[in-house]
Length: 268
Image 1 (cartoon, rainbow, N blue to C red):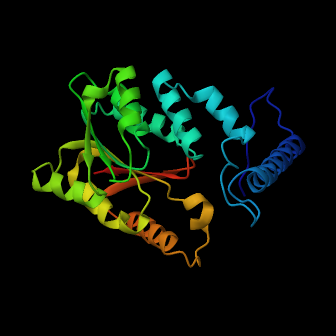
Image 2: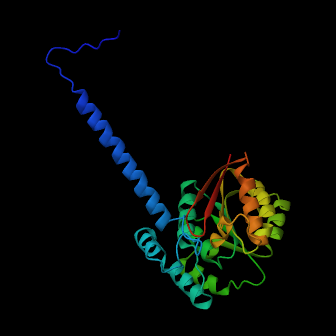
Image 3: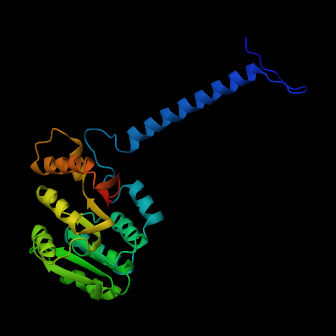
């Protein structure tokens, strides 16, 4: 038999303990139920009609979050607005700002931007680099960089940005051939052709230094990536890439619900 002794003057009501425990369990249950309800109604677990995190630029939740977090340089804001007026598209300003903060945190000096930001990402990233820092920006032959250059000059960072007008793969191949492996602190990939993203991932990882960050924007493919049986070649390629990265022991990994899904790979 086990007995519990209480010192004189010390009293314990087991009925009170049971009541408090029951209340605690009940509160946990309510909290869990509310969390599931909110998640299903307002976040990723949405109806089949829409699998986007936010319903476009004007989604009030996105507007609210950006209003309280986005610190956009005037030149970057003008460039984003001009890009939207030419071709209505959602520039991931929140993803670019996060990458800028991370670049500053790891004391980046060399950054590589590969993608379709039309000069927005290089501008945001160049703003956080030191005076001798450099952003290498890969533009496709169909992209016009003249408009972006105007805003780079306005922000005073045009001298920090080097433009390479070639395909993403060719840009990466040329950098590797030039002995740039392990020289970059951060690589930002935002590609229109997700089918070549697997090759770009491998080559970008070789260019990245240990402790550097490889970021891939658009891994949700506007929600289409959630449909595992999608017939889209692009979606299948992105899903296969994400699965491969999940098993890649060379990196630490996080995926954030920022922009259209931002994957962060930290090279070990």
